[in-house]
Length: 377
Image 1 (cartoon, rainbow, N blue to C red):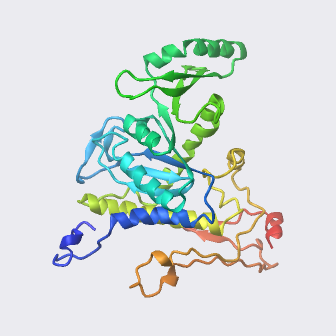
Image 2 (image 1 turned 30 degrees about the horizontal axis):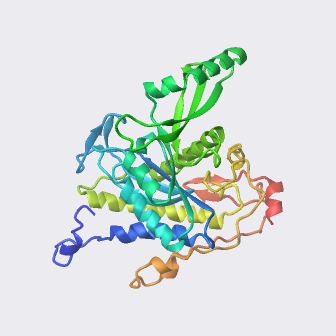
Image 3 (image 1 turned 45 degrees about the vertical axis):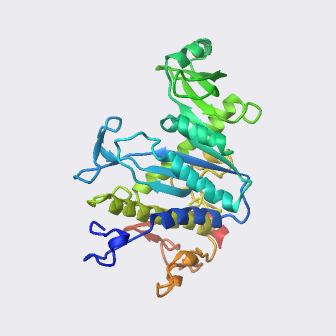
């Protein structure tokens, strides 16, 4: 990949390792999301976030990032629930929101080609709360919910609510929070005033204010529910980003940006296969219930099950991932990418543990209770 030529020079170049079309790979990730739904969802929430990938060599466009205190890349990830829609590699010498409008425009256009009337909400933290992105959403029928960095003006506006939270904390000895909302406009960067929802919270360590900027009205989402049930749910996306790092997304050691972007695509596609396995093959099992955005709100606590607890459901006998349509016709056997999970009920009474263990990276998992497996038989 380090020596991969540009597509225009591939025919005459000495090295012909791998060439790729970033446009087609970008479209593929969104196509897989579309194919996963038999009917248009009522609402699609697009979660955006930037993260750091530390660099330990002299890769191209290597810059020091003060917030992360390291030399790194700053890729932008976009998810819809558990499904990855974009993984864009970027250098770290730019704003966290750089290129976000282009990525969102591409994804929203592709979604609306299939589902013209679907409701789309953009959700991100304060690192992506920028006028350009908010204005684009307002002009293109896309709702948004962004975190807003605190400042002295905002702290002064919620002074009464923070004092109230302080009094509640002194009375109860427990963390206390009071919510407020108001119209707010920055002195220079915003083109218009917008609704801001504030959380005035007082903890043992002191004040802990938070602010969000929604395009959603108070009739659609009350202040407390908007923050606690809608905005805070974006934290699950950070778990999905951590899973990228378990799939070699941080192995960006080539000496060209396009080679490192290709490695990021490989990691994204590996995650897509694992997500499909979890969503299709392990449906209705504890292993299939990742902390995704389409679970009901009450499922958040249910997902924090104790170690060793197992589901009373079994995976289906077989399932398949319809990826053949995305394979190049020159591949000899696209069916090789079909997966099947076999379920066996054979048990040997002579064994100390009558249930076969499942090998995984040198370890075996045999914690399932007899009563649980008997329900699956």
